[in-house]
Image (cartoon, rainbow, N blue to C red; front, top):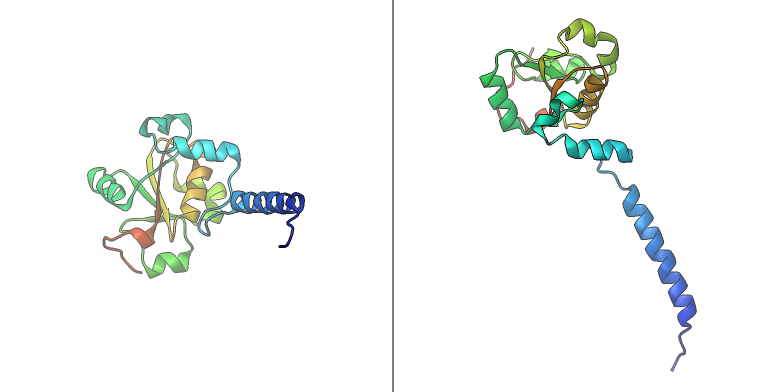
Length: 158
């Protein structure tokens, strides 16, 4: 019978476990940017409707977004994709403001910082970044619908 060196096996096991934990801690879904601990804590707060006035956005489903649009004609539907994506199909009456232009053009396109703004993109990554940017600019009523890819309702093309 072969004698096993338990000391080496234990060390190897510890190293493998540490590597596995390190890799799993660094994993980020392909459609979601990495977050700091503060952003992660903030994201858990975003599910609370009352948190709107405290400078965080709230995520909503496509169904909730549709209800909001249908029930509140003053809601601003904000598409943060690029012009070509918008032209290929967008939510009716959506305003285009590409993510890369939000900081420079938000005051011009969205003058009322207390307006209800529903942000969306293609898959949800840019809408999340757009919602965070708007909150950082002082907007108080921001909803993140995520991606138009989950929108089962009508879209219009230009």
